[in-house]
Image 1 (cartoon, rainbow, N blue to C red):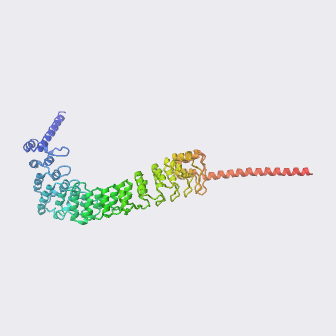
Image 2 (cartoon, rainbow, N blue to C red; image 1 turned 180 degrees about the vertical axis):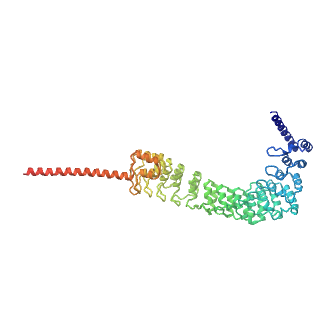
Image 3 (cartoon, rainbow, N blue to C red; image 1 turned 120 degrees about the vertical axis):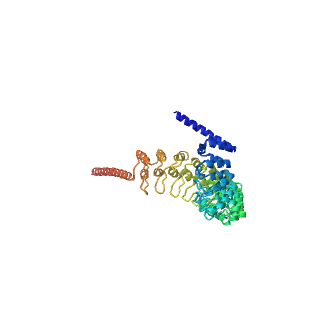
Length: 577
């Protein structure tokens, strides 16, 4: 117990001394620091949050303290902690004095040079200096690099760029470009270093792309520098097929877009792997200024991506009205259509963008009779998404509630199928026909049953007086459809309303029970059996029995009738005699 207490006290004392040493480094009190290290050399082995006194010496750029530590510490500077060398910390903290000292230390010919030592993410000190914009560190590092070229058997100018790639294939130039460090980029573009300007990382990004996507203040200058040095890099594409222009648009770097278009003469229409242009990206995100610049550079709204969608459609989808206006005006106010024949106005309905719908109605006068590839009108789409406000608006603006799609379905059919009860009620109230049949002979009641919309079905029957006894072209009733689709609540409600439990579809030779059985809906099977449901063969047998009984009864009646007739004749003969 006493030993444990002594050990605990010792730890407390050493921690206190460690904190004292850090304070001395911060205050640059090297004399007291050296005395403390002489008195407690074990302080050099302590780590606080993963950092040793060496790290703090580098943090405050205390050259004399670094020299003291290097003399007394047996550990190497190659991997201080977290697999990072001392030079990594120097690059992070911009410790220029320590940098010169460390690089001047002799190293074996077979050892990896300081500047290309990598941490666990394959990042070198040069990467870090470039990232943080520590130009002095870079210059000092490359000064010693030139000396090392004459001595090192490992390093030469031809393979240098291969040795300074991180684990995702990025060079220091990528890092400088990402954070828009202009001076660092200028240093790294030294031809003696041999860093390729168009080198791609694993994502296919070049330094120019990184700069174009950067949100740092000097990004435009870095783009101008990199783009002017190698003009071919402007049209380079990443793994997604995007160019620097695409990435600049995504980052909303308006100034960079301007430089790419007007100074570096980057084409305004380049296509990524999904055939999307920068205008698609700008329109989708609602970047007004970027859209304006791209249109001025002759980018076209007529371009379609691989899904057949124009930039204007994307702008509509996200409710960017000002962008929509720019794009529509650029197209001469002509309506734009996607590969499914859907106009921008239809997209505004599908996206439930009520304000944009009203804007289209007021300024662009959309065609009331236009249908898409599937025969849907705008009213069909409004009913399909269940927007009561838009259905009211479109009906008021003259859309035909009786118009049918390619399958013969009206907007009422679609609303019933989706269970939009309020829309269904509204359409019937304004004159939609509850008994209208599609090409399969199915009324909206069928659609409600197929969609499993029991509440809507209830409202249609009780409030809107829709009939449940219709049969489609296959001879099936709504009960067949509900049983076929496994819609238990609809089955229960239909039987409650008096639907024929054994309605027989002669074309398919099925009853509601056989439909449920064929599709594995056991709960419905059990319910129908409890309510007198029969399979087709049982129904046929029952019909045969009924016919047989009827025939037997009919035969008996005929015999009785014949017997009575004979008696009457005999009686007449007797009377005559």
